[in-house]
Image: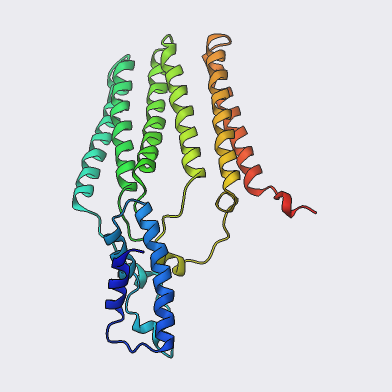
Length: 293
């Protein structure tokens, strides 16, 4: 076990008479803190910092030993006690990238209004700038610790950033294709990016783990777990089925573009999206085999 836990816990109980009740409480807290530290370390936090965070969230342990339990704090009080301020560097990066993305979107609007015809390369280029900027903002935001959540692991944060940027870039390429209908490669690339981004979003969503801090669990009304949290095999199957659906959808889009015409491509996309939503509803809410009589 992390030795910092023992040291910090001894400091937290300093000056408290170690009655049997206090000793039992200390051991119970030790086990809970150890589990929380393991979660933080798995999320990329150093063991020493993880131990300090977990102990800090306990507050004053004397209140836990009072004969009359203290009235539970409200959400605002708990939020204020555990508040985490955004890092200045993150704020600066977010503002600059957001301004860059907004400038790119304004540039697209001006190009559509003032240039006749607007160049598809210009629209696609400005759209790429906006997509990359907002994708980076998304990943950077998920890497930050907040008042309620621990930072997301770097790989998953980058995955969400890529999925966000890919979706936005697909929209930009689709807009560029609308300005140059003879450039079929634009709509094909847009379809590939969109399908890949949706598949990535689906995978990340199906494999998402709990990021909430310990104090959130006591402050929030308990919610029943969804099936993917209690049945990892169902989550894995959903990810595989989703990938298959979107690969088939992508193949159908390519075939339709080169045979029936590009205007049939949205039909394949809508069919793929409908299939994925039906699959999600089926796997989340269908009765388990053990529940059937």
